[in-house]
Length: 122
Image (cartoon, rainbow, N blue to C red; front, side, top):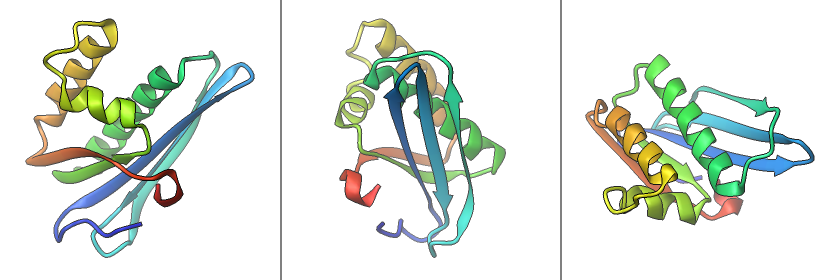
């Protein structure tokens, strides 16, 4: 784990799909590494990996909003999700539409970015 810049929180999230469930986990840390919050959960349906990561992203946005975080870095090991977020205006799929909706929520933060991290550091 690498510290975010001063005044930022870093939110790591991940999702997995197995059997008939989708699972996700989120951890929120301050710039000094102090854990501010987190969570996790299950969804009793099988989603594709991309949709599971998107679901985890939506859940971590809820946590960030509930903690009144205004400057954050969202970190995931899903390169596909990071690429979709970075190309958000160009994706005309249903997932692209959902990402655009998520980005409207992200616009409420004074600063928010989504970055990729190797699974071993996420």
